[in-house]
Image 1 (cartoon, rainbow, N blue to C red):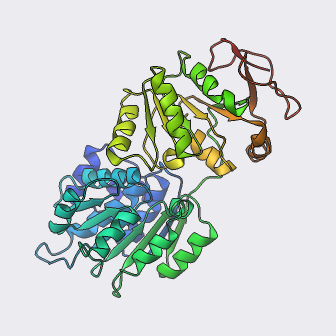
Image 2 (image 1 turned 45 degrees about the horizontal axis):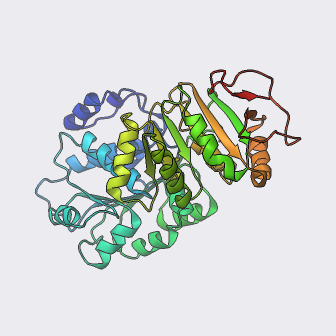
Image 3 (image 1 turned 180 degrees about the vertical axis):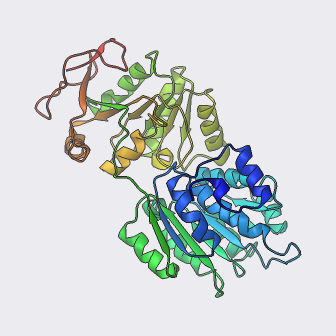
Length: 404
């Protein structure tokens, strides 16, 4: 399928496609829409931001409008499981946009928010449920809904489910599924062995589509690192965020308590900043994300919950306040900037205890990351890697920070 017009979508779906300005499908869409519409099980492997949601929503709606409008549903027919509240909300938004001209009801089930609206949405006999695992299990155990009539089961961002420890919850949800025939779709950025074993259990003769590129950072990201004692990190982050070209910055922390600490430090200094991690209430998380997207907050402090999947544009800088533990997480974090052919810069704080991890990241990257100094704050890079050529730092704009 080379264009959306190549597929015989219902006119109501075509109108939504046109409203959104979609013309040419992405690779994952062009290779999965037809087999999904035909009822095949599908494994789709593609990076986040490649249009995976529309890849399953469009054929899902296409089949919905072909049903007998008077047919009764025995509970929801479609379940879409997402690893985080933000991703689930993003999927629901996409469904509502693509179903703008179709009578299609969706219930969004998220933890961290009151039950009232969710219970009402379930009473309205939704065609589809979009949910995070924990809250869905709560509703199933309380018999607020059931999955006995489920026709389509979609696991979105399956590898994130694994990373976040949701595999026991997924197996528990599977135990609630009815015994009838159903279509199963699995979308994932990577396909590690535990996900492959789950796919073998759930999917029947699946079509496998892999359009994932090699794991690498975008070419236009300028990458640099500071060698610093842990106790000096708060001073350095304040100094960097005071630079005039730090216009839209994501700061990644390894732990939720660290994210809260840096948020408190920056907020007390008068920075406009939001914080996003799984212990924050859903209203707080939504407020922080939307305020960062619309520019009200130029700084977002986050854990890896924000490293993948979320639709965030025009990020000028990524700062790894805490270095990630592996290359893949590093790529996902720094890939939040320099999207859609834009320029961007990724900066990492490297403590003496991080040096081995940092060197492994460089080895996977295939080139050295530039070494930066900040006078009076950082330590000199001594023998850990070749120094970059002397020049003014791109982020500092020729300020006190420079390359060695």
